[in-house]
Length: 304
Image (tube, rainbow, N blue to C red):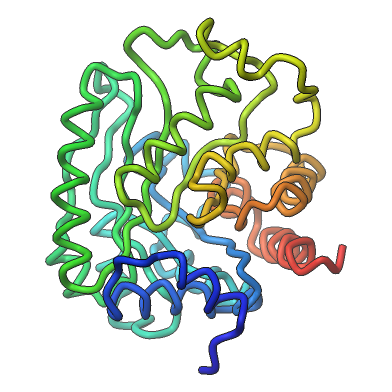
């Protein structure tokens, strides 16, 4: 595999990392139809934990099978597949070496109160399964956010020591943050910056709205028109060390195809690295999902 100048440049920005971590980042960045472009599409399937199996998969019953997701990620030419321990274990042998995997180490469920997650996997599991990265969620703003930050500090240090990269889901919620502020531009950029400060290699955040939530931040955002989503993406990328960290954006709740495509156009035009998109693909019939992913690849390649 010959590394492209684009990927070589991205890796050069991770100045403290060992060859193992950089090799695993390269595996993700060079994989699939977007390989070498610096753009990514990752398939995350952790919604069974978060929402339950029926809410996640009943609309497209083949998706109950973990093999379905491995195969779709491979057939669509995606960059990586992310899932909790059991989902990856269920296909680890059949699909070994065919797609980079990301082991999601913490999870919640729809009955739990508060904003926290349980550890459901380990760095040792990620190493055993041949994963390129670990994944972890933090909830900046929640009552438990500092415990979560301390957990990922330890887990990320362990992962780096054995050459595995870290993907950090940073979703503001809880505490003094009202629901109306969870998608605010200032809050989203702050959450992304915290993920970078915590040492994440790949940062996953939600697409922000043009709302500014924090009173103390309004002056900094005044005088700029934030109505264009691509400009908001650009701001979040700037918050991640001026683009020195890979930033991907969540697909969010199920939505119409045109909205999914417009999000990708705005991510591309704003300088984001791509999408990490689950429900908007695996909850569609396989042929429809593959057609959608094909168009998303073409958008990120500048062909649409």
